[in-house]
Length: 465
Image (cartoon, rainbow, N blue to C red; front, side, top):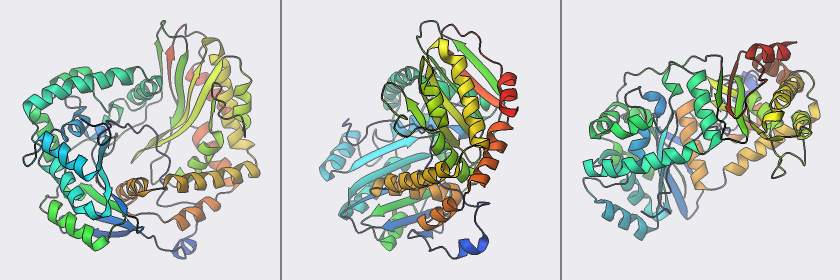
């Protein structure tokens, strides 16, 4: 299969471009004065929402966003959502795999998909004149996939190889282990790919059951941007998805954060990889935007590539002086009802304790000593990064789909700007004190010769002193 139109799985481990629905930093009167968004939204009779933004481009992107991912699975079928992503391109009741590939290639359409813990997304980038054909492709692979037994068996080995590749990526390993421990007992602890045992036994009935359970019209958004006409896209959505039923599925969604320390000794490794974090906030929590600004300030550092050296903050400067510290990346990962805020790092074993101490100092600096100039710079950087990420029809479509899923609307840039501007150094310090210093830790560390690791209680005491 051509890698151009189906490059494969894309895992979302930390998404930071969305904004919150409500905020303590902006008044109701100010919110009412903000310009309405350019995004137009229509809800079909079956509950499916259709959202578009016309930028009069010669190209367009249209995508289907489904409120279904690995956290909607159980112990027995974990990995099914991702498996379905692979099976969607193996042929339908109307098109063989060869016919599907040929049609897509002849039109020059870029067809892609990815799975996260909370969403499955299928989208097509095309010429504006081919928007109906692209919608037809998406409808066909989503609603009429053959799920042929032979195709299931052949794709099984592909997914196992993919899992082996993920197992070589230490950042993926650390985040998967962190989720498994920090959300133990809930589906949010599951990996996106599923265990090897599950991958080897998932069959056609599992895939079909997942579609029938979760692929409901009221749990989907069709988003499009570029050279698109809203009324036309609504007509296409009604034509190709209008018969899809609505419904509610029975599943366990709630996730409870569990403080933990998970140490995994692997003597064959030369470096230590790990993450130290606290419970974060949901997409719609009032503190989310402030945590995005804090995450921007803390930033990242990579000694081998020079990242974080040109405009360093206190924590970057501190860690850069530690002999053996290799990199760190701050993260703010949000879900519907919870989140994780912390730092991922790599270091030589000798520097592990010093690096953890530096993270403690960095968080305390954010909570008590971060200055107004740093906060203002981070606010401008956050807004700039958001706007730069919306360069092109595909990222705009993804932004529309995600925001409709998480917030029920597309938040206009003017509103985002007003909320960011309303954050002050005092309000940011307050949120950091509440979120970074007064919460129980979740720590995951993988590496060789893991000695002299401070307990969570020691770290928490240092944060609270």
